[in-house]
Length: 587
Ligand code: DQQ
Image (cartoon, rainbow, N blue to C red; front, side, top):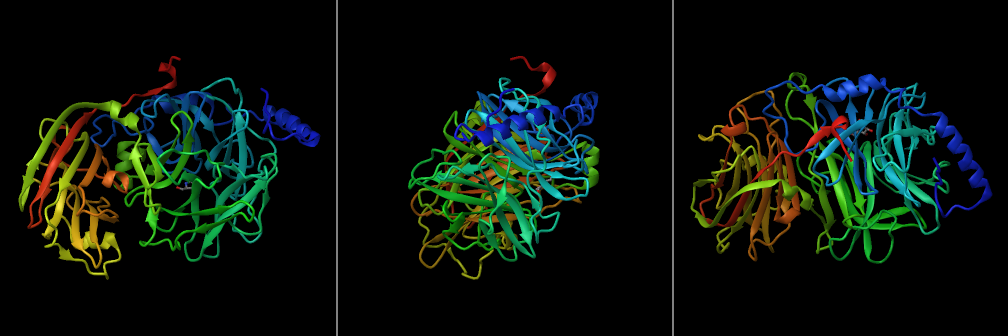
């Protein structure tokens, strides 16, 4: 194994240090120390119980057990890697969490490998929590992750591949000099976690963010390092906001000001601006702000104030948490992953034998307005599309419902464009309606408006006793029309003991000039919806009692008093993605 941390590091002292590092790291091989090789394989071979109407078909998940955050996604030597928080011992969050590891050539079909990081040393004996990968110059991927140490404190650790010529990077070794960061003075032991992918500023030093909190002020601490081993905390955080509580899984990355092309994490030039994302522990939502990163001062200046409430931008206004992006050099795009947790009960998860899925990977870029991001499922997802049905130029009068028949509605990708007539008659928007989720709650799918509710009824029974309504309402604001997107689960299942929270968000488009579009990816118990070609996204988890498998139906509906027109609807049956295990994998 020949590790060089960076080809920009030339000092003799550093070379000596790296040699020591190599020797030490080799000695700290941890694969046997996890739960034992047999147990690792066993945990991959056991499948979830039979009869699983909620098991997803094309969303990433392991065969069984609990998963949460995506960790260290990367593209490396022709292979996509996804690590993720996993409890190999059961379907609930565990007290010995590990990094599971899967690989793919297309971001859709995955092979589960043996686990990458398991508790093994005093610095992570109580769990290997979230973190990120940085690919250092010379194609050397390093993991920085949070370990829960023997005394329960959160520390940051390093690991690296055992064999860099293995494109699957199956085996990882931990640095025996771990931890490389411990909670700073004034920071509680359990409020210091989730290192980001590092970036190299023009001065040559690496920077990394670690999420945290002091009192109730959430923040992203900055550390810097010349050699990726010795890290020094800066006096000030990159950015902090009072009353936002613990910042989990921060992410920072540049986006091109013009166009959809993604850029690598260290890119810094006048053609980019920066995105700072935090996962707020207090309400389990991922918020982001756009702004400017100053590499001299190491501060982030947001374009707009960030408060951590419904006035702020979110990647997704539904179930979407602990997300992480990576730069995909194969396709020059930035790709976003997130965890969608369950909305059913703990007992349901025990009965199912699994909990949690990853959302479909989404390309993410800056909107033309420069004011928000746009997301769209990676194009590879379309390779799963099978049989297609279409509807064109269909007027939906007040109260009408049209079934999209001829497809398997429990596993479908549907795109619909609505054309609206003259909007003069739209209801007036009350400026007091500042919380779109509350507005969707107050005006659910059964409440008639003028323009809207119109949209899709997903995972519905034929008689509509069960239905998940994803819909729009159009209002007339003071200077412009206001478009509201809602995801109403109040009637999604006849089952009780489910979280049926309704979600909502505003969509920043002018419905007067153009179409109102919606795409929904339906996969048994998850629905990911994208309005206005990815400007507003809502992910939900739903568990119908009757509308499962072949009993599920898909409808377009209009419950407004005014007609709308479906200018086009296309729906495709989605084929199952291949999620196989290491043994069946042949290069
Ligand atoms: N999940 C991890 C933590 C992180 C949290 C533990 C976010 O590292 O803060 O599984 O979901």
